[in-house]
Image (cartoon, rainbow, N blue to C red; front, side, top):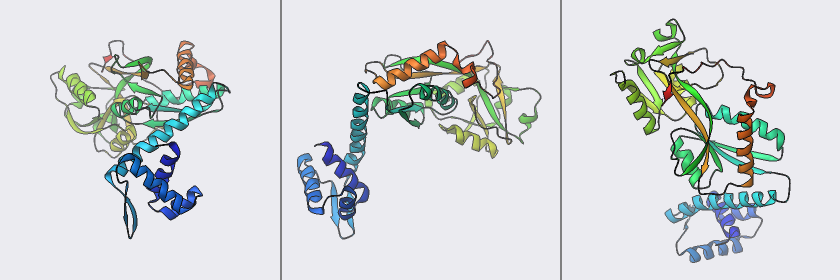
Length: 317
């Protein structure tokens, strides 16, 4: 099973038509059909059902289609990585990130890294922490930004910063006009709440309210911060998320949650037992220097948005 056969297979699987695939690959139909047949014989399974209306993938074919794309992506990435040893740093850096504050932190690091290494390109994928870590484990991304907690037995981590937990309140909700910039758990206990999807986060939020003998009325869960903003905007509920930088929204009021306050902490992580690629290692080193030199407060990265000051008694959630 060579890379060329996988390339041919992926195009045929995408087009589900040998004629179109052969034109895209710039080869004639007979050798392409022969290549696919040989691949099926080599793997000992049928990859396509042939019918009057064309091709359809078998269950085995669907599995190979998914894996072949991953293999070809890894092969391309490996070639780029090896090329970096003899040339100026280049290639595609694949970074995973959780929603919320993390993409804005990551954007600053990429902006600065781009100034030093202009030949580098970026693929940024987002999702929940479990999804991002799964991509990291399967080498679909090179490095990731996630929120604590994480398995320190499996991953190395570089602390990036902390943010307080806040409530995203619909502008017409009575709590939005409450004096001051904060709300308490007691204020939120009887409200329909939308919280992060991660199971450990849901349990932590329930325990947070439990510290005050309260039970949160959780209406929904989402791993996507944009979903949370949209739901709050349309008065579907009050969203509880770490504070995030985003385009100001006149339909939402953001207030710090207190009594007691909590914080989220973000980390740049990579597998502990894997050797980082040269590109990933260079990015990690840049982020470490960025934090040590406090570049976020330089003119290049000066923040424009207002941020809540983290209360001194805030614990990690």
